[in-house]
Amino acid sequence: MRRKWQRGLLLLTLILLGFPSFSAGQPKAPPEPAKAAAPAPDPMQVLQQACDFLKNQGQFSFKAEVSDDQVYQGGRKLQYGLDMEAFFRRPDKLRVNGDGEVENKQLFFDGKTLTLYDKNRNHYGVIEAAGDIDAALEKAGKDYDLRVGLAELGANRLAELANRGLTNALYVGDVKVGGVPCRHLAFDKEKVHYQVWVETGDKPLLRKVVVTQKNLPFAPQWTAYFTDWQFSPQLPHNLFTFTPPEGAQQIKFMPASQRAPAAPKRGKPKKRGGAS
Figure 1 (cartoon, helix red, strand yellow):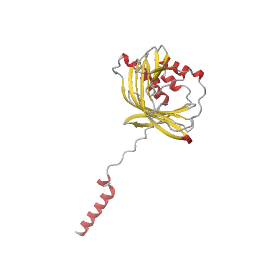
Figure 2 (spheres, helix red, strand yellow; figure 1 turned 90 degrees about the vertical axis):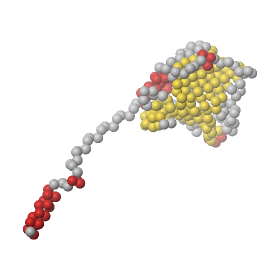
Figure 3 (cartoon, one colour; figure 1 turned 90 degrees about the horizontal axis):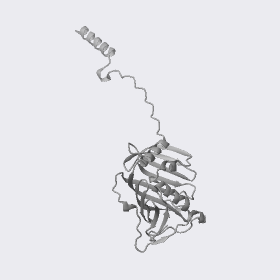
Figure 4 (cartoon, helix red, strand yellow; figure 1 turned 180 degrees about the vertical axis):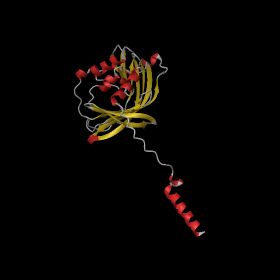
C-alpha cells in the first residue's frame, strides 16, 4: 500500500511539473506592434478650413463675450468686458453691436454707407463706402484707421487677412472650449500673437480667439468667446440701416493721414460708463 501511495505521489508530481496549471492561463499571444502616432494637424490648413466655411455662408450671425485689457499707470492692467453680436448678409450687409463696461457702439453697413454710432455720447460718423463688405472695411481701415473687432469675419478675404505677415504657426493640441471639442492653434505676426480655437467636425467654427499685442507695453490681450452661431437667421432688411436716435449728432471722421501720432497713455483707469 505504501509503494502504491508513493507511486501515486510521484505521478502527481510529474503531472504538475510537466503541465501548466489552470490558474496560469493559456500562453499569451505576442504583443501587437505599436501603431504609429497620427501626424499633428496642419495649423494653416485648419485655419483655412475655418475661413472657407464662413466664406461659403450667405448669411450668419453669432454672439461673443469679449474681454479687453487696458494698461494704465505703472503697467497695471484692468480687464473690461463687452458683449457683442454680429450679423452678416453677403455681399454687402453688416451690423455689429457692442455693449460693455466702457464702450457701447454699433456698426452698420447697408451697401452704400458705413456708420459707427457711439451710444454713450449719442453721436455717429458716416463713411461713403459703396461696394461689398470687403471694400467697406478696407476703406474704413486704410483711410480712417477704423477697425471694429469681429467685423472682418464677414469678409471674403478673411483667410488672406489672417495669413498676412505670418512668421510662425503652431498646432498646440486638442482641447474643449465650453464643452465643445476644438483644435488649439497659435500664430505669430510682427506686432501680434494670436491664438484660435476651431471646433472639430464638419463645422469648423471659431470658439475662442486671443490676440496679444506683443509690441505694446505690457502686452495687453483681447479675448473673445463665441456662442450662438446661426446660419439661417431671420435678418430683416432694416437691421442693417442706421436711423439716428433723437438728439444724435453727426460728426466727421478724421482721415488717418491728418492724425498726429498717438502719445503713450498715462493716467487713471477708465470709469465704467465712459467712452474710449
